[in-house]
Image 1: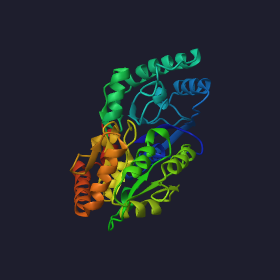
Image 2 (image 1 turned 90 degrees about the horizontal axis):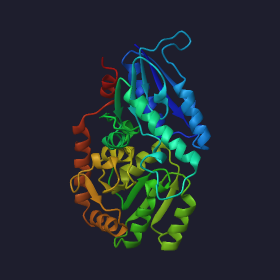
Image 3 (image 1 turned 60 degrees about the vertical axis):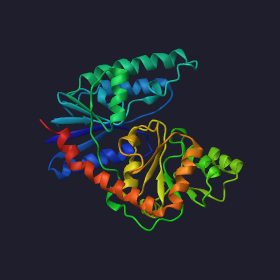
Image 4 (image 1 turned 180 degrees about the horizontal axis):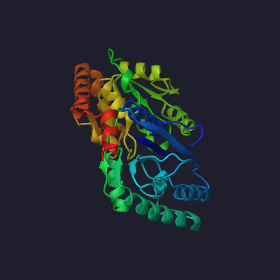
Length: 343
């Protein structure tokens, strides 16, 4: 079978979306298919550039690409699913969230921004409704899609990028949080929690991003520089080590789509501390069985961290349960590809 994977790319930025595309590519190749990843660059601003990219994808007909006719096209990211093909399958990572759940109606918006929002919602609804099948990467994404566009979909899970290299080791007194340093990831919750910790637990935060200056300032203001460390960007090997030796992993983003970090922590046999409004992680963390689900409140997060420090057996047991829970879900790249390509 000839398969085209259609997605967009922000030049010089690589993350979970690119890892998913590559994982799907590899799974299709291993199944004996001919497969290609087809991308176009995406620019977040100005609004006219977003609109232009939408128009470009809508003009694409994948039924004939230089004489090569894909049997199936799998679309991953906005607005790649605007293309035309007789067997268009969507595996949606997320929509253009700034016009959906992140749109703040209480703030004034330009006429151009409002027009773009209306265009995106209308085009999304039309093109997603017209796909042969629609999948998402998590139930949280499916919930948004139904709420804003009235489109039914099926959540289809896949393993995290670091799955094959994760291991565990004796816990050391630190909480690990790897993620891009941006507002929605809410590293500030962990930083603020350290001010209330009674135990000598430390917080190691991996990743780079635009919030680095603000987090440096917050650490200084709270006087927690002796127990919070911003590690910067990490190699895969460094990530494996920090996961393995942590007592637990904190991942409390705001309404996350999926959350590789949750699954990576579980594979490293570590409990996950997440929040009641964190979205995707709530599909995997079981409160008091594989970790803790708490309000996004630094004092309550600090109490959970102290609980794990003073009861290492509890931390190890929760981590073991997390590992078992991950494997009980029994999802794989092979199964994901098989589902997407079914007749």
